[in-house]
Length: 120
Image (cartoon, rainbow, N blue to C red; front, side, top):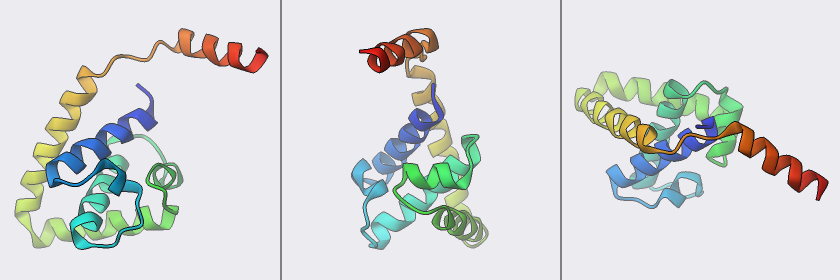
């Protein structure tokens, strides 16, 4: 599974958990009902996927500094709201279950299809 696909699963799981649209993860809406889940998803992407801030930011339609800020804010929220830690554990379990259920990427077939597209 690609890192981008894993970030997509994180976005989907967090959106479902908080009852928002997966599209809200990359929207410019600033309502708390959207911002907090988006920050949590950015934090999870930073924690669970081996990508840099810039790559995670692109997946969310944001700059890398927004991801850095989200990570800092979420870490502070953990200290202020211990119940959030329990929610994150549940989200991680959902993400891991979705990741395990997702079909593996056949890199050979993917490379072949890319080469076909490139050479028409």
